[in-house]
Length: 243
Image (tube, rainbow, N blue to C red; front, side, top):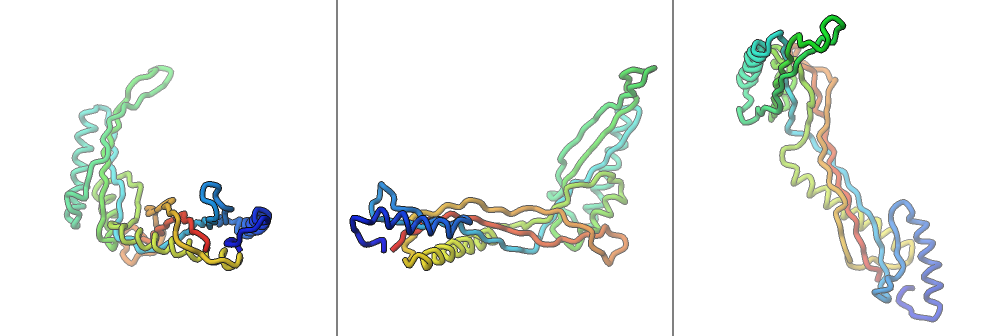
């Protein structure tokens, strides 16, 4: 259809391509001939794929927060409690390189009372460490041990994959296959054939980290944890020529 050159070609092209655009209005478009490349029609599609994988690594922020009337006392107590938490975690098998200090702060606590306006009544000290857990079977136990040994703030529990490259490549491959499938569907409806790839662009690749929790646990001395799954997604934009 598009190979024929007649004086009516502009009218035919507009009519056919308009119907194709309406048919693929969910995101796949058939473009009219580019003025700069006479006679070359194209199909542009967006391919998407999502791969669900089991996470193999977890991380969490574990902290100790203390308060005392004197700043030195607050720091001393905090140091003792933090050291106890770190010692307990290492005793369960967490490597030293998987424990990293994220923040340390000292903040005054003011009274803000009428009889003692803006007076300091004590000091808060906070020490937060990020722990990386490579054995997901121990996540609940690690969190429980951290609490039992003195941690009083825990947040940011996340599950992800340690080496996402292979999963990302699989998602990319599947996204390109999805783009080809979409292009074939459009071409079949138009009575043409899909040609070579003119251009390709990766729009996005996502390997999110998710918080999971709330499942039952067989160990009564551990925090109930359920890792769930991690969804790795990829989106590609591909332009094909039309034969």
